[in-house]
Image (tube, rainbow, N blue to C red; front, top):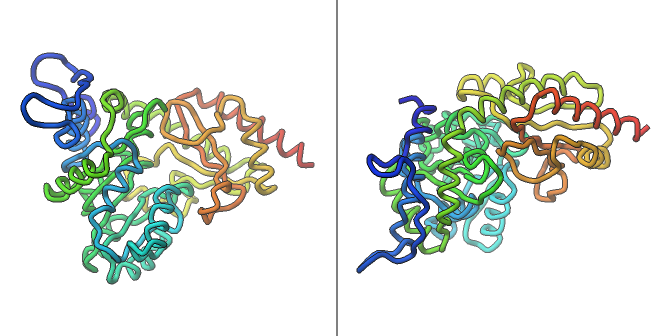
Length: 363
């Protein structure tokens, strides 16, 4: 079956209720405990994700919990190649582990394939984002997986921006793929969850073991909501990325915008890679405005339909000024946009009015 069909049917029971209910328990009769063995609600979600990704999925309490579990088996002093520009939480996690002497960290630009492959020599693990956060750069994931494995490194891919519909990293050779299920998978900004999928049974078992030891188990309601959100991912993503393309094109032509980052634009440096590797260009974009952080902040304060908030992947369009994160090597005037399901013209009229207001205010 195609991924869109698997979204709808994955993890459904063969008899009884059409949807697995919320199962609220910790212990089972005689032997067994949810912390180690899971629950039917978790298992249904894991089965659906595993079918999509082509491996064994393990649900976690958050995306960061999944990331921590992925890193847990690394031996002391292991060399890790991580993103110079990527999700802030993971970059802080890697830096703090390096500062404590638990790993040796080298940060690289994931869009510079040759630099990444050079860095992988002698590394135990490469942490990659196929669509980088927040600049939406495009990594050559097929080449990175091949080159990292040739150098003896395991490859972990955070595919949150891409979702399992646009890219399935295990098919390209990745060892583990993870998502913040809080985002596009849940899709409604009402839960915290993560999920990691191993290419082999051994890797999946290690993830499940780490989940139990770290206490990173998901809630039953969260697992139920994540699976329900997964069912509509295809239609949500189709609408959102169509709108993202329109907004990116119009922003690129707007005099109040200095640069747009969206791989769907033919002028974007990652366009060719995205067209080759992905099944769509996604619903995330970023743009820069002249005037520095003051202009970017003013724009966030003047939008009315677009919501100024952190997070992504929900039905509502969110915009965030990224330069407020000191760990990021990103432009001070950068704005990250997660495109939602509103009417494209309402979104554009809102952005256009806010951009005009900021330009007039600065002059």
